[in-house]
Image (tube, rainbow, N blue to C red; front, side, top):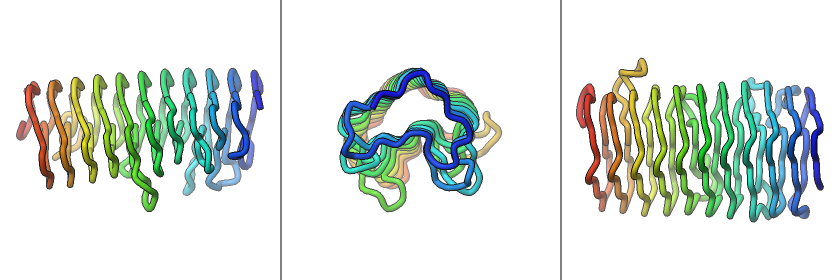
Length: 273
């Protein structure tokens, strides 16, 4: 299936769906507006098969009420091996792009503006996924995050996810959540002006946080008692060479073992580095 240069307006359910028996689906240069008009859990594009490409599309004004509307979902079936979501524009929706059970994929070079639920989600047993060079502005809420890497409620753990070179500005909740994962790498990201934790690592093992710039978290963004890096119930974590400035707490560890913290620069924090 190849979809090029098409327009989809006010679809009550999904704009495009290709089930797990499909492969090599391409969706590019198309326009999507008003998905989820019937108020159900819907997607603009749902690609369940292997080796899929979602490139250079525009997604605007997905309806968000009490339900979850996601513009692009890859790997939601029993397949989902190999995906590329790149060069797309997402605005005024709920969640932009999500991998659910996807593997061996990349979400890169996308722009997210004013997304009420989150920008990017990597969830439900996704494996070997890279989230790279995306820009996210005014994204997220108090439940999820601008970039959300987690099993998602009763799902299965996520493994081997790399989050690198992303810009997250003015997140309306946590900027980056990494939960119930193994083997995550978070590096070279810029996080500025977050009302909750900059990076939240939760129930995760064997992960690295390095070379990130994190600033204006918590009191400097209009909230209190928030951390640039917050660790909860983690094992074997390395945190090094991060620049952390103007936050409530720099690095906060709440239950964890085998944690190495070294060569970080922390300054102008309102409470504890």
